[in-house]
Amino acid sequence: ALRPDTPWNIVNLGHAYLFLGRAAEALEQFRRVRDQNRTEDGKRKYAHEIKDDFALFRRLGLALPEMDRVERELGLAAF
Image 1 (cartoon, rainbow, N blue to C red):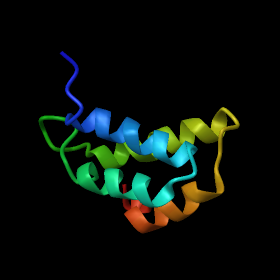
Image 2 (spheres, rainbow, N blue to C red):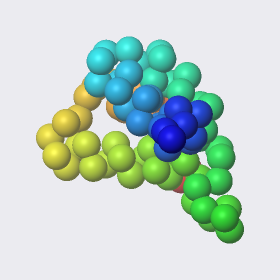
Image 3 (cartoon, one colour):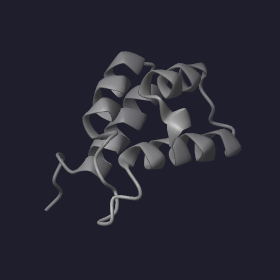
Image 4 (cartoon, rainbow, N blue to C red):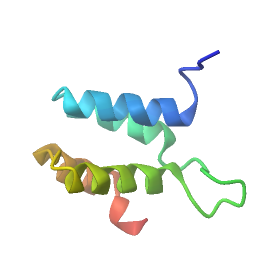
């Protein structure tokens, strides 16, 4: 069964909010999972996934002006 409370689903919901122009809600979702471990060894956090997804969106020509602000507010440069 699909669990909406899993971190990867929360990241995807954040992306959806961002593309709908709802940056504040996107930030809320990203903040929920940013510091959670993505890997068992703790070397990758969900912040890495969000940052990588933003890079992919840009390569695909799907950049949004809000992405820069979201990255700054989440402190993704550190990841």
